[in-house]
Image 1 (cartoon, rainbow, N blue to C red):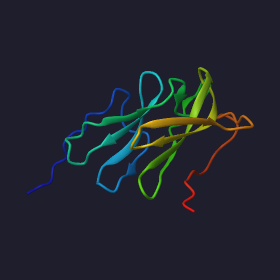
Image 2 (cartoon, rainbow, N blue to C red; image 1 turned 180 degrees about the vertical axis):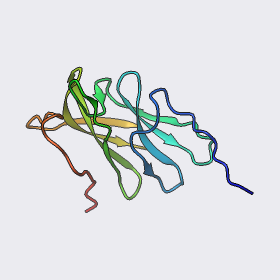
Image 3 (cartoon, helix red, strand yellow; image 1 turned 120 degrees about the horizontal axis):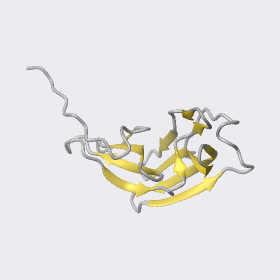
Image 4 (spheres, one colour; image 1 turned 90 degrees about the vertical axis):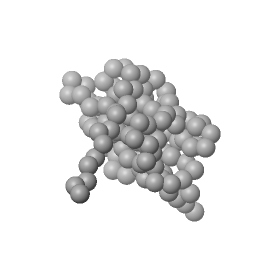
Length: 136
């Protein structure tokens, strides 16, 4: 028999921006909401409907350039033990102008902390090529 894929029910903002696999077979992803980003958990056996793990600050967004729009990428990482999620996001200062910030989320508690990079690094002027969690 041919395999079939059930259509996913995307969150209000559309498809996931990132994707991290958890040990239990579920997936974590950032998704754009009406105001800000949210971390969603997709259960591989749950019919495609995600649950909200945590909502980020309303001024978080995907990186974008003024007049050109979203750059279309966001970096993220999941700790080896699956307890901590980190993501590099844009903290909007004005519409279309943001600075880099690192968001940490304790998955069991849903605790969100945003750390603005200092000195301030504007999204449109400084590129970032990687993000990870030190496991030492």
